[in-house]
Length: 250
View 1 (cartoon, rainbow, N blue to C red):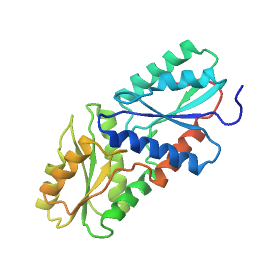
View 2 (tube, helix red, strand yellow):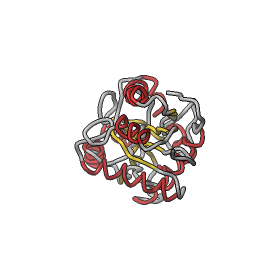
View 3 (cartoon, rainbow, N blue to C red):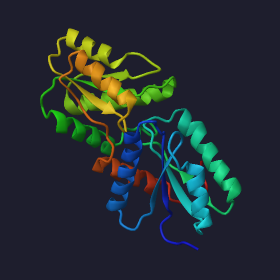
View 4 (tube, rainbow, N blue to C red):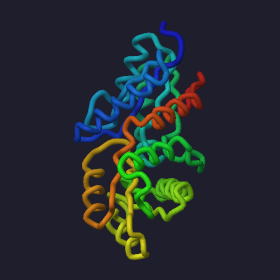
């Protein structure tokens, strides 16, 4: 039977864009490098194999009795509330000896914005235009879940306080405003250099659309997704450490 620290299973949304899967694998490598000896496995809810149920069943077959699942999500919307618990339940029905902990998402948990998340967003902004903007747009994928949108708003508020300048939320889908509209409103209000912070874990069609629209609306720069930023790897490990007990919690 395998011993030591429980393996960590990262669960990403999944995308038809191969860059998204590679970003997840890069983050898994970064987490492993940050904590040598920790087994870190990647999985996806859609479009890419393997899924989390398959990975968890494989761990049980290898003799593991514990595992920690980390949702690679920035909001606690449908995928965290429904899809991931369903995948874990399917795995534990097939392997009842496996105790699985599911952590909080990487976005705000319990109302708090983790400083590591803010540091990762700052890093990406600094890489594309350090000190060259006077207003920000936080561009997210979008969700119909009002509570999830509220958590994105908390991140925007934290960035606004951190940089000492206005920061507005925008969405690629499911909710207004669109990123080009948010950029335009800031420019109409007097901002001359609007930057866009990408509230994305990986590149893909949504991110590409946001970047194109933002630049067309007059943004001076668009940050790249968080991908394997060291701060993001640290946040994954923080979530692991918060939920590494023996009792299953989904």
